[in-house]
Length: 198
Image 1 (cartoon, rainbow, N blue to C red):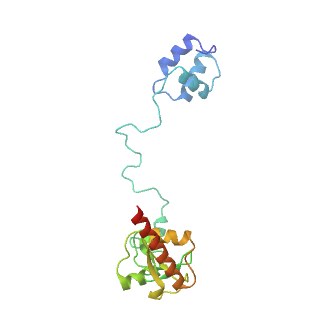
Image 2 (tube, one colour; image 1 turned 90 degrees about the vertical axis):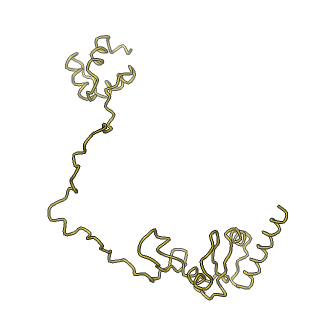
Image 3 (cartoon, rainbow, N blue to C red; image 1 turned 180 degrees about the vertical axis):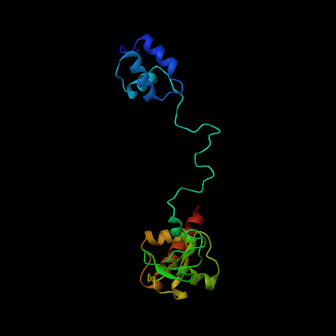
């Protein structure tokens, strides 16, 4: 025990600590012993002495919130500015709207609700899917000539994600769509060789 606390001090704290906030305990302690200890000092001593007031700031089981059953607090008259059910913000775009993302791809809005990447789809994927059906998982549709505005079906090529990785790493995507398709064949051949050797 620290030299600044006597057995009498310790006994007083043991007798009064349960359920008493440290600020209040410090006030009681100072009044009883004529000291000027802060609540932090008393708290630190109690912690070192393994004494706890049992107050941890958590709600106890069965605690009823003060605002249970209330809809919310607000300034009277502010209700007129609240969103009404079914209200749409003024900047809501209709289905079929088109925008350009930060990477330069054209996106088309396909639905009104859901997460953003389900509501907006890349136009080149939609064009490819309209002609070929759903894009398989772990695949991507790329622009063979690198032009993100050329939506010609012959320019849209379906590749596996693993193939796209190799195309990018080996710099096999060109501005000439024929060269990119040759690069894709090289990558497909590399993948076949790995399958045969493995």
